[in-house]
Length: 83
Image 1: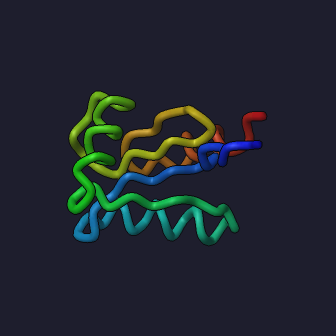
Image 2: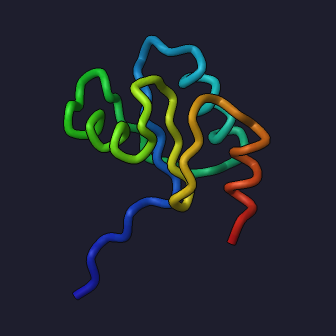
Image 3: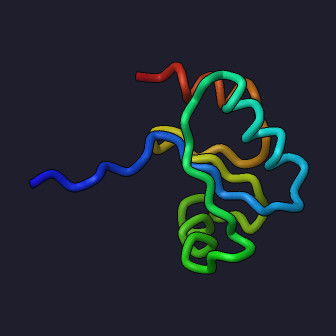
């Protein structure tokens, strides 16, 4: 029996964060599938985000285990291209 692997791209965001919207739009434009967690409503995911990043601010992206804080196109592209 195989367990579901963790998604390759996770976005921790809030609905009112403009940089979160830009990050998710950027991923969508590149055709990247991602899981979006609203940390304003999901306290467990908020704790998970802080544990991974050490940050309270959003967005936080987890791309194949690489943590990116904020909307940083260059860092996103670099993490996506890593094997």
